[in-house]
Image 1 (cartoon, rainbow, N blue to C red):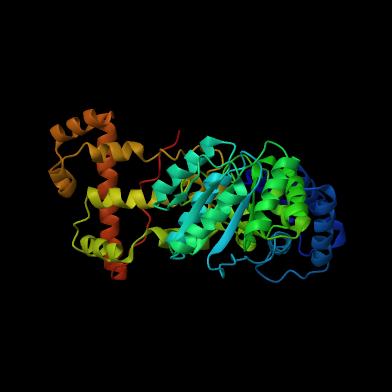
Image 2: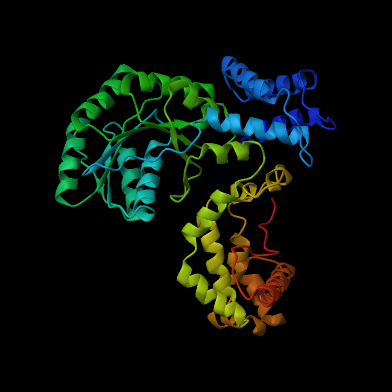
Amino acid sequence: MFENLSERLDSAFKQLKGEGRINEINIATTVKEIRRALVDADVNYKIAKEFTDKVKEKAVGEKVITSVSPGQLMVKIVKDELAALMGGKEEELNLTGKPTVILIAGLQGSGKTTFSGKLANFLKSKKGKNPLLVAADIYRPAAMEQLRVLGEQIKVPVHIEADNKDAVSIAQNAIAYAKQNNHGIVIIDTAGRLAIDEVMMNEVANIKTAVSPHEILFVVDSMTGQDAVNTAKAFNDRLDFTGVVLTKLDGDTRGGAAITIKYTVDKPIKFVSMGEKMEALDVFYPERMAQRILGMGDITTLVERAQAQFDEVQAKKLEKKIRANKFDFDDFKEQLNQIKKMGNIKDLLAMIPGVGKAIKEIDISDDAFKGIEAMINSMTPYERKNPEVIDGSRRKRIAKGSGKDVNDVNAFMKQFEQMKQMMGMMNKMKGGGMGMGMPGMMPGRR
């Protein structure tokens, strides 16, 4: 995410290396490089200039205290200004309606339907709500089918009227159904087009008038850069939406949309979405995003994702097994599954301060754990519960069953034993305490 922008900004800060104080002379080159980096990231020049003028105004004359270099001070100033540009603080959804009606709008291909499923999953699993998904895209049967499949996947009902060609009545019927069946949230997935046109705008505006939504979320593909900002402005002029959702942030995005969309339409970014997994949805925190853009990591989000996936009761059981040196391959596989649910592996690693830059050139696949899982799945239930019984002949069978080489199995077994030893040592030193990490089990590189 934002790798090129992060690298360019880092290079700009190095202009101040060795300086004892920030002044107008030594800051000029740095500010110029920051502006260039933003423009290359598809930030409008006027916004980039206004941003760097603010940075320069705050930076000039700042005294550099002991243990803080001018470069570090500049990073803080830029981080604060970036966070302010992106909204300053997070904005929560308005969930006061009975039911709360959330209208999803955006162009075709922006990820509206996938986001609708993710939002329903988020509201169900994290907010304890009982949402209803509504398929109001009357032009694409595939959209209705996609929403139906997503609903089954996350166990959320989907209101579909396949023969009804009136999106407004579908939305109204769905709300009536929600009231009768105790659904506190109604999420309406609307039709999109490849470009803005009057038919699409009229239809979504008519739905808005008919159902008076509490939230109108505009979903935009962040990979479209400045075009995303222009599209957001056109939708906002017509719909006066309440918030923005940035999708495909795990793609090759330059970051311009994330940085400037709030400035342009004066509406908050409420969510960011990455990947296809239903769990891959985060509330948008401007300060955390600014930290990530500047390569400072985002430990808070990483911990929150971990907490959402790691069951406390299960963790205590696991801790007891580790204390008794009974941690086995079934436990290990369960830990893998929980980590996979947290999202894209490379994106997770990049949340650790300093790691993002180190793994920039490394292609870490989301399938990186498949080889390990294949080896575990090739073991018998007895072998998984009793790793110590896996001798040479068993390893050959496991290798054959998983499509791996015996050396791969040997290496995995060795890493597993080292991890168990390390866990035992940590328990002795700290009296217990489980983390989510698995030393020595970094996903393989491709």
